Figure 1: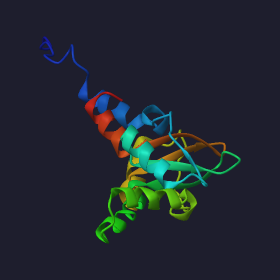
Figure 2: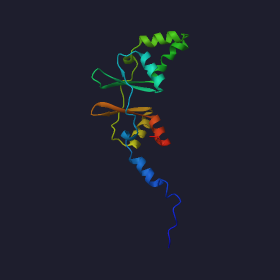
Figure 3: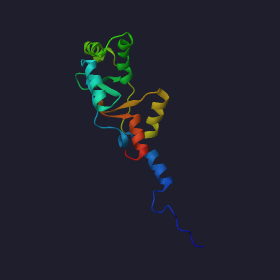
Figure 4: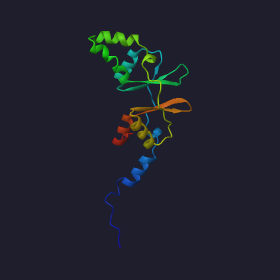
Length: 158
């Protein structure tokens, strides 16, 4: 009996592709170039970096370069309260200039190692309802895994 020609022979085998996706690690899709802040930076810098780079999470490093916390767009939205109270844009900017990153950053940060499976990382993000995981190796920040990295991976550009 002759085996019929496989019409998908020139394409990736979906079973193999699925297996490969499950074998991927955080290192395979994380963003290795991470924008960071210092604890004593002003929130205005965080706002500028997030706006210019179109990112929503900034790890915060201490004086030794160790992860001390994270600032998210949500933390900056607290500053939007000033707008709700009737302050204009210039007053909001002054307020962000008066506050330091360490005053609003989250200090309890879940991290992940680069060798962790992508599936485990995704499950952690879903379970904890978080949008990113700083990637730490030997105590040092080596990348960040965000929801956008998963989208890029699914789209085939990761």
